[in-house]
Structure formats: C-alpha cells, structure tokens
Length: 174
Ligand SMILES: [Zn+2]
Ligand SMILES: [Zn+2]
Image 1 (cartoon, rainbow, N blue to C red):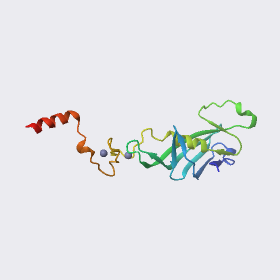
Image 2: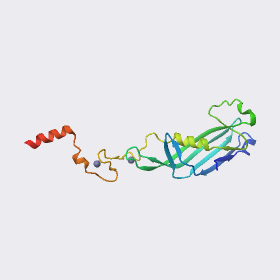
Image 3: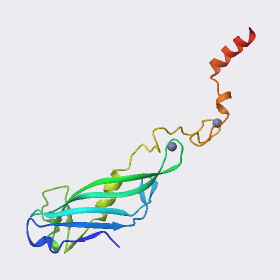
Image 4: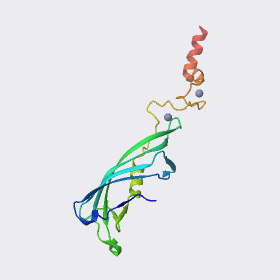
C-alpha cells in the first residue's frame, strides 16, 4: 500500500485544484541509527493545484511518534504537525532528462503520484534533535540512576561536594 493520489482529472486543465485526505500506518522510521515508532496513522491533508508545468501540492501532515527523552531515558509521545509543500513534475516515458527548472521538484509519470517518500522526509526533518519529555524533566540521579520524575532517592543526603565536606568537618569540631 502506498500514499498515492490520482491526478488524472487535475492534469486536464491548468488552474484546476483538488483536495486529498490520505491516511496510512507507516512502519518505523530510521533516523541517525534511532528507530522512531508511529503511535498513530500518518494523516495527510493536501490541496493540489495544476500550475501548468507542475502540480503544486501543499498541506499538512499530522501524526504522533514515540521519542526517547535524553534526560530520563523514558519513551514519550510527541505529536507532529508538519507542513507539506512539493512540486510534482509530469515526465513522459523517455523524456525524464527533460530539463526541470525547479530543483526542488519531484518528477512523476502517469496518472497518479506517490507522495509517501516526501511525506517521510518531511516527518524526518521535523523530529527534534534535542528530545526532552518535558522542560521540567529532572532526569536520572547520577549516582543511583533513579528516575527523579517518579521518585526520590536518598543520594542527595550523601551527595555533598568534597569542598563542602571539609567545611562540615570544621564546624563539627567546634
Ligand atoms: Zn525526561
Ligand atoms: Zn540516587
């Protein structure tokens, strides 16, 4: 199954426009060695306009992925809403070498366009580099590894800066 839109009618006349609503469960994405799972189907809401030389497709991708927090190492849900803007150029058979002026454009043949590769790359680009479950995340205790969002550990009491320990000794001598 692919994310495919039929552009048979659209191709007939410049200026025609058509809306498409697509939905698909995508397999996990790989991003820099990390596997990113989808928690919801990927939904694409598109408007495609016949702009003459190309089809101008624009709209929104919405889904939800599972990311791993860099501080507490827990998985968390991350809703995504990504803009989609692509130009699709029709190429006929052998003329694939025909000069495409817009370097951003994607060539296609026939009466339908598979938008899945562009949907995936747009999602990949919108996944944050710094993954934090919440700005208030307290992370893990550097001593015992306890997730400090969930419980407290007793390390803090013993976790005294060595310089402070010297002072403590001084006070205790009085
Ligand atoms: Zn976290
Ligand atoms: Zn601890």
